[in-house]
Image 1 (cartoon, rainbow, N blue to C red):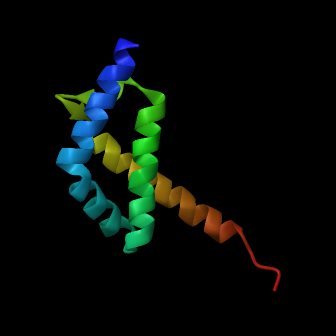
Image 2 (spheres, rainbow, N blue to C red):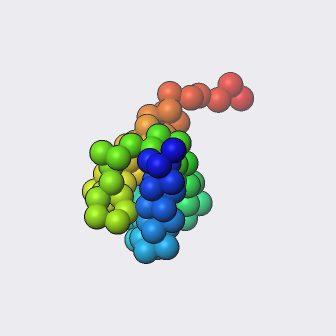
Length: 88
């Protein structure tokens, strides 16, 4: 229970201090505002659900990990789009 509370506090700090940077990183990767906001939202959900102290750094989360998460989710999204073909 204590770890969950600490994780929530760190998630709040991440949002308050680094949200604009995370969105900018995602936008630089995707070149699409909507997709970048979706990826950052997925990051917040993942960090909130997993509650992994190994990802913590100082009073927030490891920003390099956050950037890598966004990049890998975007690449996975691109791979899925390439696999899907329309029948029309």
